[in-house]
Length: 334
Ligand code: AHG
Ligand code: MN
Ligand code: MN
Image 1: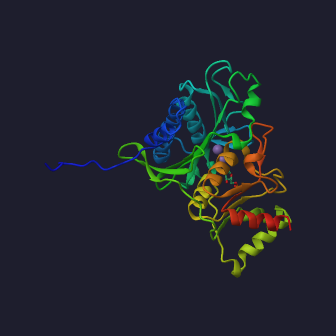
Image 2: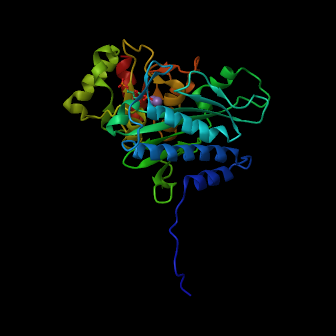
Image 3: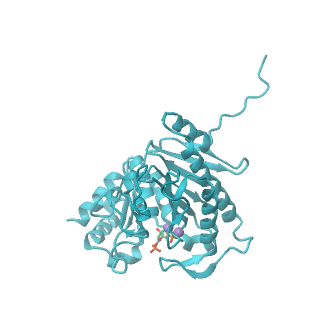
């Protein structure tokens, strides 16, 4: 007898995580539960983003955050949504957010709560009111070791190579989630009809080179000389480059991941240590870039090797196709 209907094969992010966890016999399912908290939160945020002009959530709250930046209403909605969705997961011990001055301690070190989640709840805040792509970035660490009663800061301030997972969501023409657990980079698209992220690309590789360079050229005169020479070269006809800069790191990175090229936020006179945050912007994206065959550096060293010294530490960031990152470094240190 003919089958009357064959359901299309779809793979949701939950199934994907579950399956990859099955390959690790020691996995307890705790991690899968944590990631499903993040997917739930970002689906809720995506819905807010879609309706932003309809509800009273455009504009600022009138506050300035710990970084000295103006807080948008959506920054707070995103922050509290993530905190709410992760707070009751049980296995998250500490949460660190760009919008919070201090870490939120959910569980004491002697309680069973293995994970530390660090996030930029809403990246690209200045683009919210003008309908340009924005996103959420997350990084997951494990508390250092069972029974290690180091201070909260000691548990949080681990170098990026210790991340057990990282990813982001871009709220754009479609809502896309990209994540890694150190086993390749996978991309999912939110299907609004069923409210689930569906696999769109598995084992994504960043092209070895690409013609786009991405930088805020308004700061050109403030960049180190070597970076200025790279930009001169990039503008020459021989280089055959194109410039794109969205101003939301997450969206600029997403394009770089798919098309190759390089994103630069070098030190400037105003921000000599760089502008972007190491723990919840540079580290997760560096983990993804490397897993996709790309590279990420602060100009002196690999981002993932940096040992953070403060929660909201900033860094310069050169990230993208390996060959192009190497070329930038060559100009910088000539
Ligand atoms: P956030 O909105 O989370 O504060 O991050 C803003 C960041 C980043 O998304 C972007 O790459 C960068 O700021 C843009 O900075 P400039 O406006 O200095 O180019
Ligand atoms: Mn950001
Ligand atoms: Mn932010």
